[in-house]
Length: 594
Image (cartoon, rainbow, N blue to C red; front, side, top):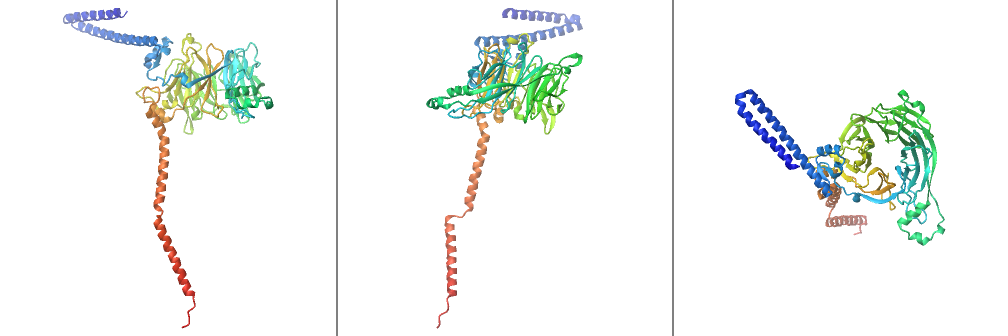
């Protein structure tokens, strides 16, 4: 193939030079026409040379791809080439890395510790973590109760609840939650409070049903259990026995749906796109977003409080997120804004200004819900700031590196944004795309990109041959020994039953470390220089305080008199007192008669 290609280009060059010689020879006879033909041939030669260089670069890139595929390792490609090739073949994203934004680590086993598979025989449709109030151990039990429950909705629209720490059979269910045999559950939402445990589900007809979970630890008769066995029971057996003592029940609280009178222009019936429970003190509301751009607010008993239309974008309200207090963040295809549940109104003009539709949104918890991260359908991720000092704003703060043409599902975790590649449902090659979880370092992106490769992607986790379809993070995981440094992540894989539970360990990025890492180069681990600089503020503050204490003591010691000076002063004082007493005694004696 290659010799024929080079022979073709060589033949073109020879013919071009022959034509050039002929033109030069006949240029004197033709005059201006010969010079014009010569100029045309020179331009054609430049085009051929550019075409040859382009084909040579293409052949070099293909050779590198072939070498990487045969060796089983990913190769680095420039960002522009990788984005262009990925549009034509999903395989490019599987065998290449972005040369400018290569991940710091791809070691999945180092950060994802597999724990267990929950509901291994259940085809899961939705799953979520529900935080619980930590139950302290009673009697001779050493381990406390679970910190959270894993709630599942399966393909047959049944509800189940599992203890993530012990595994085993479900604590609840599977039970029918009353949507009907021919109904498909489209949404699942849970409360985040440790006091009330509400599960909100919605089906394809727009009907919403709310169930309240009650978790009780049964007090068994301890005299029936061998005391010596309980005393020497290990942690795993302790958790399994605790699992048998938990009693979880579900009760229907209310049921409601969008009113028929809310039909839009032309009699279009709104379709439910999002549902969210909101807790404000002792009051609970339920907010829903529909396809006509409206947000409805319901009381806890299911009574409608009010509805208002917040967007005119096609598709209406696509999602709702919890903000501060009673505020709710809503987003549509080309806008997002803040909605008040109590006032049933939009507090400020929505933000907009991008071309591709929004796929998913997450709030940065480190900025108290004032920074919004948008994942667009074309693979771009934008970060907006909604405050500027004390006033409202809509400022584009920065943009994530474009590492894939597929949109992301987003979650926030310890200074990072977890992004799962999620191909669109209308993509004809949806199943061919590789699905991975990217850990984007927010601090490194705030510092900016330099000439060297960036370190904005802390971890790029792939689970081949499994394909992650969805994932959720536990709110706060507290281990049996009170360890608050670990978190659980539950991943649902495409075409597989059950939920795989992992212990996720990833240190939050310090600002100094992120700044140094952004220009440190491409290494698997952070260099000793960055580690030293990350510890420098702590050592510097301690050293300054210690030096200050030492100097203060030295100054105090210098101002105090020495021991010999103290002895001399004491002697002089005692001498003065003795002389004064002797003088007083002499003056007080009567004179003797001569």
